[in-house]
Image (cartoon, rainbow, N blue to C red; front, side):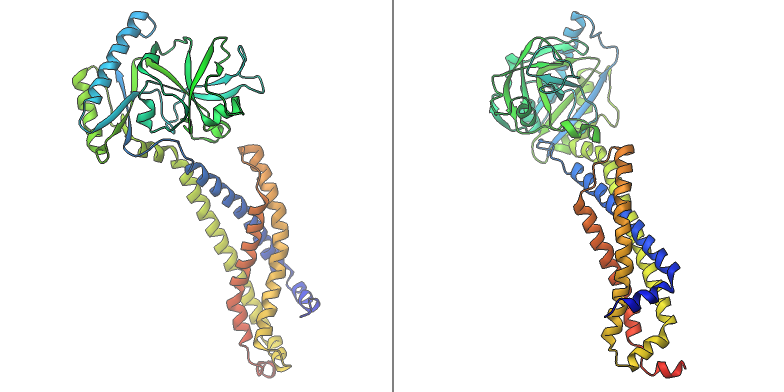
Length: 419
């Protein structure tokens, strides 16, 4: 089939050809970037936290009229109150383990800093100074969160100290995640080595390494250190506290309902609202609600754009078929088969869609560069663009099939009736 007559015919319908080509180009540019955004959001939502997420919940409470954490006596009294709460929660039926903790993955409440293999290094320094998030807890933290120890040992009760919320005492020992340990000591020999926390001159010895523990932040700003967590054996004493609780299988809902009454019985001078006791499943759902919503929105936009583009192709091709009844009849009378007419319109659409796709590739790259500049989006991989090109070409062929098939059914006698 020669292209010259086809191109000559398309020149007679320049406006329609240009509009469909631009529509395909715009659809390609938006769909490629939208699918890339959807993929990123899905990857973020599916990131493993490192926790055994089943049967785990977090309780947050605040004391009323609590002692000040700025004096040694106040810190001691706050720690005694915290330990009373822990003892009461551990005695609840259905509770497997409890630990005080300042935050959990995806809670979006974090204590961030940096660790280095050299003393007195500020965070702005390059090289061995790595961003991290701190989790302050006790010797039960690994069992409560379900963390897997891959090297070294866990904390013991003797390792655990306590401090006021604003204090910054030395940290004799820490446990790191494998990602963080490998960044500091790439040879895999981190256990027993020293690190320096937040530019300190006092070393902290790494006594253990856990497989994975995600940071509390769920936004894109955490992408570079999503699993750089540091566990510190410390109970934080303040006018509020958080308790991570692991229940026995099947007991999660029942235990969660008893937490507030139990804590009020220990000390009624506290505040626990409806959002104070949350399962980790609820924490995960809340953290990724925006990502899921964005993925759904981008999916709807893609569906609408593809539908509008397909409708445009169908409408324009149907219009052309109506205008070319006589020419189609003449070709049929001269021996053209139905399949030849079908292929003609399919090839014609392929030329238009291909031209639009070439323009769309440039538009997709340009849109991605703008998103990178203003919204910190990653560079669009070539694979997404190629998939988008294939998608719009296939869409065009599917959309043109019905009107092209109707054109192929035009009988040869139409040529004589049109004279």
